[in-house]
Structures are given as structure tokens and as C-alpha cells.
Length: 95
Image (cartoon, rainbow, N blue to C red; front, top):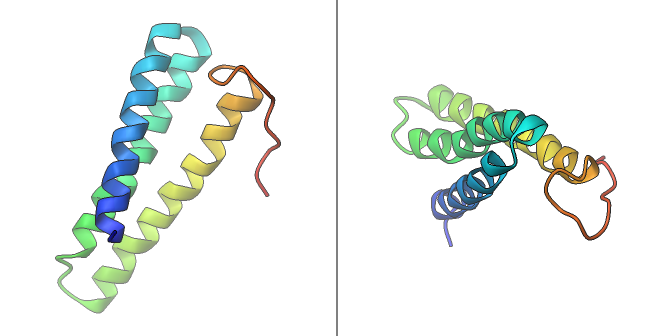
């Protein structure tokens, strides 16, 4: 599976998670808005990179996607550690 397809599928999963979190309200709702922006932005920037006007533009788009992926990588475990989404076992922070 190509990176564009993988990031699209990831964005769909993020949207479904955020729809669930919106129902919970409070902190979960606030974090879900941030997660929705960063999680869906990854795929958007990867897709944009496919039609970059130059090598520099291509690299720039992928660097933005990487930054968004890092933000998403922090937000998802934060929801877990805060027990705002997952209820089975607490997570350990990334890194």
C-alpha cells in the first residue's frame, strides 16, 4: 500500500475516533479537535507533495506532514494516559 493510501486510511480512522470523542465532551472534545486537525493534515500534505512544483516544495510538504504526525503521535497517547478514550490499560508516553 502506498503512503498516500496509508495516510488516507489513517485520516479516516482519526475522523471516526474524533466523532466518538465529540460525544464525550469536556477535555476529550477539546483534544479531539486538535487530533482531527493534525491527524487529517498528514494525508493532505502527503497528497500535496505528489504534485509539488519542485524538489524543495516536495520536501517542504513532507516535512509538514512529519510535524503533523509527531503532533498526532503525542495527542493519541495523551488521550490514553488521561483515560479519555481507552479504558483497558494506561499507556506510557511516547519516547
